Length: 551
Image (tube, rainbow, N blue to C red):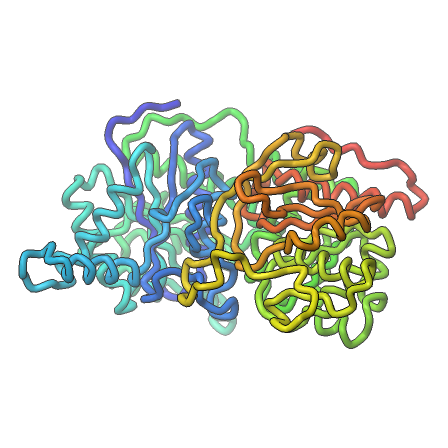
């Protein structure tokens, strides 16, 4: 490992339009630097005034990504953890809401000794303090600034960046600016003016970008690179082309490597970090693009038109496919359609069914129907958080005969609350950061599907829920064949259930999708895809069960 005494800092900003892919680019850059032997950490600064995204609608924000320490964060932190090796904490996602909350709290305590509290220096100092704290213990800290340059709410962040660079020395700071090069069909060429104007806005703040990463639908010509270099004052080699990847986001590190981004970064920052002989990401992409098999997995949810709501689940299914040399076709199924049409109309041609986490009662009955269908037809089933609770409700109703069994979340008056609110949640009134959140231990029952997947006696998984398996029904459910195979050893909470004598039927109270990587698929996702593939092979002329290659 390379030992660097002086911390290096990279700031990634975006211009022209939003949704340029700064989070993916940050993650890909972190992956490339790690391949060079550097330790990295990535953080996200979000200008919105929410304290965190935990209470925001999926339609507004997409998935809420949960960290080990229980922080509810931006979905980009999922990209950071999937692309790099380190685990992040609540200090790696900072919002304007957190900053102002902290500043006001200090003012109320009298920490500012009666001074007038202002954006400069008090807000900017708060931001700079977070940069210093987040970078401890690594060689390079990458900070993505959410939003678009010029947005009024982002100005305190960019001003803090300018001050920070001056204080630690420009030799230790690198500014990367992502922009869009739009292509006008009538003109038949890429347009550079929006990028020029975006860079001009940065210069007004006092920041000169060192590298331009240009999102484009067409290759950047030599002439365009020269024009951007001239008007934006960056070297021609520092104009980086980033086209849409053809197949998978995991192609991005290799694409940026071919553009020389990691070489430029290490050179500009004075890092002696040679490129590796082998490209790990090229191998990941090779396995992804050259599968030996294919399976269809039905995902039953209620935000099917907004797939960012299930981003980590989608990626974890891909990872499970890579692990099994298998392409995973995800069929997105609206639970309400299953309620209307019946499960057979939507599930009969699938090789596995997954019910992800969620809140609220809309589509619940469709999910219960999907669980029953998978259980009755020996179709591999994977329930995540709510999906596990759905499995319990289905089993209680359709095997135990408790016809009105339900969760207290959906029916507070149910006579058989097989899922009930946790004791420590009964008095909670605030919505934000009050659920059971973060990593908790889970002891596994030997011989279970979960144990065979993990190959461990105990694991740690991340949670996000208020409702829990009701232990009052545990003996009754287990006697009927719903086995408890994972429990929290500290509180005896049920964490994993499995159906007896079923090829693969697993429900987990936690969110394994938050700990899966393309080069290291989560064991449960790998096992689920393996079971789904075996289901397909058993019903096809090819009768050979899959033997996935080792990592």
